[in-house]
Image (cartoon, rainbow over all chains, first blue to last red; front, side):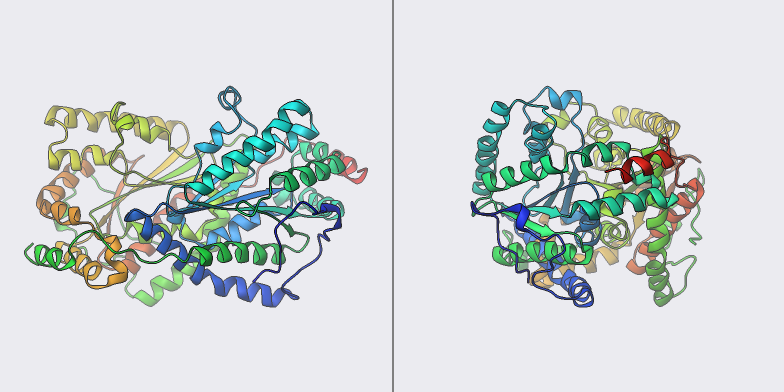
Length: 273
Length: 273
């Protein structure tokens, strides 16, 4: 299980080593545990879903935020991909459309929340509205300041209605990003993953780190914690995020529900058909 | 590859043996091919997605229809689940909500169509509006008659805008359904999968077979074909549906796209950061 601790008020992003691997010291072990844990993760999710068929209201929401190339896609493919697609609601938040811009920033987010029994996965999220908005000046400082509180209230509401929230920032170093972008430019079959805009964003690296530092410390609460997952080693990040999901689901301890029909009576009805 | 042929005007559902396994004669081989083919399926989908990032408009839509317990869920878990979740848009159509009922029957379907580069998967679909609606009298015969034409026009429009459609009816026998429902009642950890309404539907078995016979022959076209996949053997249905998907994607022959930026210039820009 992961040795990561949630972000608290004294947290300093600049002190996290993106190459660290707390909790597991070698790739082989991490990969073998990742593979081994899929059955338990799938079984816990199925029970959560089963509960929801008989009144259960609980769901899980995994929020993924990161600089470009940090490995969100790999988490989705290699961690989330191990769960039955019927138990997952994945949504990737892109630059907002005109319709989305015409509403408050949580409007599009509310539409993608997981239903009971489901693990929701946000690839980017409402946190873009205090991250890129701060760095690129898309909103005024006053508006951004207000949003930290709006986000806290929103997440409190989600928790109160049965959603377990896990927020993950995948943390890579600037050098690691450079080498991953280089790989996308060097390998023709990876060229499509590169966007010249990635370099524009990269040029604001320090400002993004500052925006994350503020957003993480302002919005990490015991009920809606942020975890910073070192991402320079992809095998580590996958192991760690799976561990966070597994820990959350084990905590929920879902169980196959008591059904609201008479099993014996239905057996008789069925036998008569 | 599957030996299934698309439904045509002379097709008779009652002549399909739900226990047949055309194209592969044993479970071991089917399961080994299923596992082996995931890499190719994933790679083809990634290329389709890559194309879409540079103007590609093509997508795939897999429509799954079946009687209860026929194995739609297993297809999603074991066939679709082998593809990167980022490349899949899965939607399960349930009984329509009041809002959905206030619109035409394709309204909710249009909202769930796959974007370019994506494999859309419909667990049930607009075909419910000519299946259960016919059997249970939710719509008049005139309305249902009209819908076959509306569906044909709708699917023609999808094909014209770049969607490859594969429609699958998983076909089980009435006896097989009975024994699968019995299993759900007998095993406490499966009780949650059973719904007394399943027996109500089962009592209309013959009417459903007739509704399928009509819907399939009326709406199977060379561009939007129906396949009836024998479903009594789950291992066969999974192998066959994967084969249909694979065949469609091979036919599209997607390729990593030429990018619209100057790779050398971007390498220099990146090196300077």
